[in-house]
Image 1: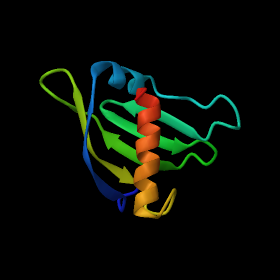
Image 2: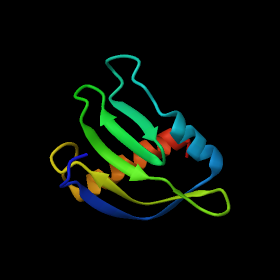
Image 3: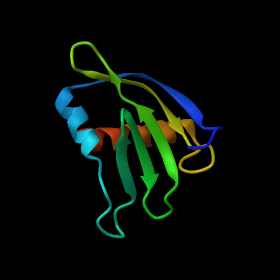
Image 4: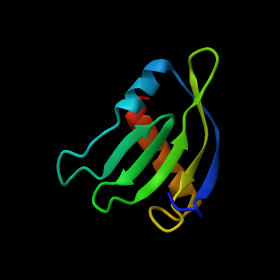
Length: 102
C-alpha cells in the first residue's frame, strides 16, 4: 500500500470470532476468472487485484476484550480501484462481507 493511501472511515463493523477465522483463511485465486487475492498478515487484511498484484485495500482487524473484532476504517490505493468514494466503500464492504461469510 503506498504512503499516500486514502484512509476511509467506516461505521464500525463488528465481527464474530468465526467471521475473523474466515477472513484469516483468505482467498487465493484459482483461475483467471478470480479477480481478487485476499490474505492476512498478523491483524491486517490485504486485498489485491489478482491480475495486476496491486494492493487495492488494507484494513486492520482490531481485537476486542470479548473475543470479537472491529473494523473501523480501511486504506485504499489512491490510483487503483474505484475512485468514486461511494463505489470504493461498496466494493470494500462486498469483499469483506464475502470473505467473512456475512
